[in-house]
Amino acid sequence: MVAAAPSSLAFSSARRILLDTGLQLLENQGFGTVSMADIALAAGQPLAEVYRHFGSKNDFVLGLYQRVHDDLEARSPDLPAGPLALRFQAFMREKLRLLAPHHRLLRSQMAALLDADVPTGVLSPETENIRLRGLALFELVVRGATDAPAENLVPALTQALYAAHWGVLGLRLLDRSAAGQATDELLEMLSAGLALATPQLATQLGPLLLGQVGVAVGQFLQVSPAVDFAVARRMAKLILRHRKVLRTDSEASPAPDEQSIAVQLPKLHYYISQGWPIHLILPAFPAKSPNRQKVLGTLPDLGEEIALTFLQSLCDDIRQVYAPGARLSICADGRVFADLVQVSDADVSAYNDVLKSLIQRLGTPDLDVVNLEDLLATDSFDQARAWIVAQYGEPLAELKARVRDTDHARAMFNGIHRFVSEDGQALAPEKSKSRVKEESKEVAYEVIQRSNAWTKLLAQEFPHALRLSIHPQHPHSDKIGLRITRAQDDWLTPWHGVVLLRANDYVLLKRSQAEETGAVLVEQDGRPSHFVAGPNS
Image (tube, rainbow, N blue to C red):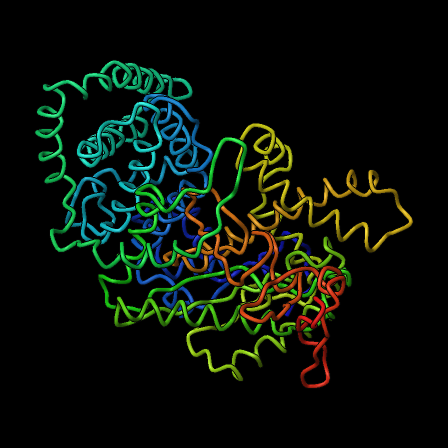
């Protein structure tokens, strides 16, 4: 354990530090001259630790591909609303931006990128899952366009655009013009051509041409004919059945559609193709709110028991359609937010200990708990929190701009701000409501910043896992907002509420609301557990 500055490599997870160090060495010194031992030495890690995470240097390049797609999937809800040409150009600019720091490495690998027999080749069997993820992203680009073509044309158009985007990426690697001007001009021309061509897809000639292109591109992409998304689709629909969607002024809460399903299929297929259990990760179960108007105390109660039981039942349901089943890692995030939400690290530890004992007592074998200290070696949680923000956090100015400019980001902010304001008012009743609401804005921004940073760290640690969230999410996000209890609203969780048992069902609500009904408090193991509706409730 160390107590270094927040920027110290000691805070980093082994996989993260190895990937960063390996990519930097390969970028600066050349792929052929760097050995795995060199990477271990530069990272200050034993050689055995390198091989535990990466089987060869090729795995570092594959790790780069995965990292880029993680970021693209996270930003896909931010694609502009509008015609296909606009969305295509916005997507391409974002991908070019993400790849820009790695041009030198990728240029040195040009021959390998074009060789389907090399593991890092864009058409190799080893990168098939990356291609599937890329195709899913382009399907989102197409389906979300205001001028999207008929349903039967979507697959062919998706494949054509995916193939075209490789041409743009290849030119950028070879582009020696100032600031990639030649590539920028090509992208402008492609977008202009797409704007002209899209309306023609509705004519009789359009589907004929696109069908021929689709057949050729499909052969070129070399996606295995064994790829069958039937099981993956059933699992995606099963999970999405329990989802919570951000509600905005311009969006209803639609049933899962093809866009919602498409983004999940490649990750599900990754596990199905190897016969492994599906891995789900859920950042959740931080600690009880310090607001005693909402909760009964500092430790888990019946609300957590119901939520854990539901999560196990979800894994059981998946096993009904896919024999290997699923395992779900609760990525407890109390450490990440403790100082912001005015909860002590001691309370986080106590909550976490009881949570783990509940998992054992309830018999939920497919659930496990991952904490910040399981991923980062540190004896200072304050420094670890600062490190996560420094390494993975989005600048607050950019976050505020997204909240200002996009409906779903604003809806997320409003939901978090409401909870922070409620707790702030309860903890500082001497302050005016308007003052608390204003002070809570900055806290809400920081909560979202840290939440996103925690998500990025988890994506680094579990690159193939399906991502869940306890918050409502954009309907086409790579994260699925999961409803883990019956609650009065989509933002309420067991750690922000209490369970009220009624004659025919239960509901999660705030403690003050349960007490106002005249409900009776019930204790278990000497601790308050839940409420039962009284005869006059």
